[in-house]
Amino acid sequence: NYDPLTSFEPICYLVRSPLVIAVNIASPYHTLADLLNAARSKPGELTVASAGPASSPQLAFETLKQAADVKMIYVPYPGSAPAVSALLGGHVTSVIAAYPNVAEQLRSGQLRALATASLTRIELLPEVPTVAESGFKDFEADLWYGMVAPAKTPAETLSQLAGLFIAALQSPEIKPKLDLQGLYPVGACGADFGAYLRKQHDAYGRIIRDANITAE
Image (cartoon, rainbow, N blue to C red):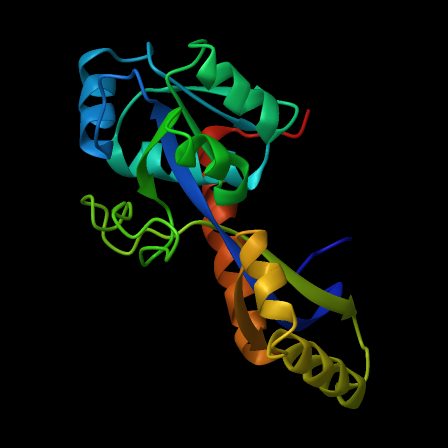
């Protein structure tokens, strides 16, 4: 049977893209606490949109919903752009999306960022607190990109590939291109990446089961 943890060999966790929870600038909610308190007072009325279903943003939202013990409705869209458009049009209460998908609207003042889901604040939004700072210790949820190889790939080959990827991430030509896309280099390879994959697999596996999330 297919098992993502045994069917592949980890090479490197390359980059991450911070998730942002945002509302329309006309929204009465100015902090994450405002949004969650409103959700508690109006269970089942407030909505969160994202690309989905069964996407990383939905899993992040379900994790926060469980931690905060609130009843909010998840509204999937066939991509982040239509989810953001729905928020701009006042059709949903909030959105959770990778920073690059809301950057333009944040800069133009159309959207307000309530929190970022990274463990630490991001350089591009230094004034926006993290979810962890907002009362949910150790909360962390990023979109991330990594490289794996087929199971039983020789260790020497994996090491060579990891070296190539790390060299690329450290290249002065690459960082500006990553910055333009709102991507942050990580460069955790081999056993470190394997441990991260197991942690993600276990944590999100629980959320998927608890929230009965299915790919549609």
